[in-house]
Image (cartoon, rainbow, N blue to C red):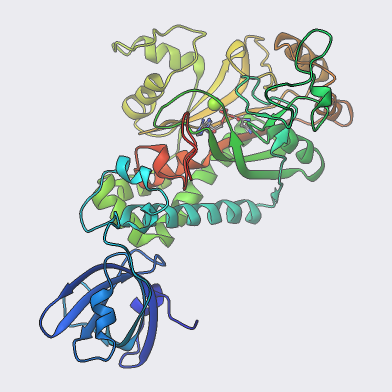
Length: 461
Ligand code: 4AD
Ligand code: MG
């Protein structure tokens, strides 16, 4: 079906030629002699104006083209005299693919994002969600472009796994056993040796462990895929299914890891600002005023770096009544993160060298034996956007850490092998892709930057 994308029609330089466009009717207004339709096909933010003379043969189709209907218009592309739009289409023929019933929920009025979430199958036809998902595409493309330009190989890590990377026990079980009458072993526990994989398996929380294996062969790799967490936290920044980008580099330490993270964030921001101008203008005006300027400023300034121990000192002196009291050894909470990045530094900040006891088993133990070579990147409006570390490459230290975390050496024998056969200092991080999209667009709820959110109690669509 030959037709011109509305994005291209709006940028046309040649006029008075025949054009065919397709799209969904955003609005229609009829006067005695003409009808005016705003047509949008999602290829760009703007809609195109179609003018249909009541004298054309197919005018009855125009009168049937209710809001939400899908149509094809053949007409002449004209330079528009009206202000605000440069081109319009003077219809010669209008066909309808599908009329939208009169109960189409996206009539011309503003809807709350909460309401739109209940109609996630249709919400992408609104200005806001069209813009969000075009930006999501651009950011995703920029991620692959960034790593490709720097010699990283894209690795597809498994989704089903028998190991728990973060050791937090927040995994969704994958099983084909009979849920009502599962086979039991002698101890009357579920006998997973009878299950599909002959052992207990889950959806992965992170592709990191496998990325480490590949970095130990290809030097620089990254994963970009779905990850799953069965954490029952109903917040505006947690999903049960989210996409994570995880680079992993051999022959790299914590400082090199932070350098890459910083360069990476700036690159994606710049790419989106340059390639999604119209969508970003919309967010700037209607969602988060001034976001373009603040993203541009961010691309110019260096991120702060501060140790956990210093961050705790700053929080103790902050003269704030935090809900979670501050003392060395606590896990830094969102309220603390936001104080550090929004009020204290007023820019993104890496917090490094966290206490060993609150971090995962794979992080490299520092010489003080109390802290690990970890880094979290905190950004204004969100708090944590990246978590990463240098990895423990010394087999004896790793074994001790695993014992501390009650991890079974047999299950992780392949992970330990990498330390046995040509171990290297190596490092990597994980960036939550949806948090990045929130950061880029100013959208406050993570449910509104993912096509179909999975959260506790909700897996619709
Ligand atoms: O800090 P996390 O748990 O780190 C890891 O998974 C490491 N294995 C990464 C690595 O070093 N390769 O998660 C990394 C990031 C967080 O900083 C956050 O942006 C995001 O993933 N994230 C979530 N995003 C949405 N919903 C959730 N439930 C998230 N949990 C983590
Ligand atoms: Mg983290």
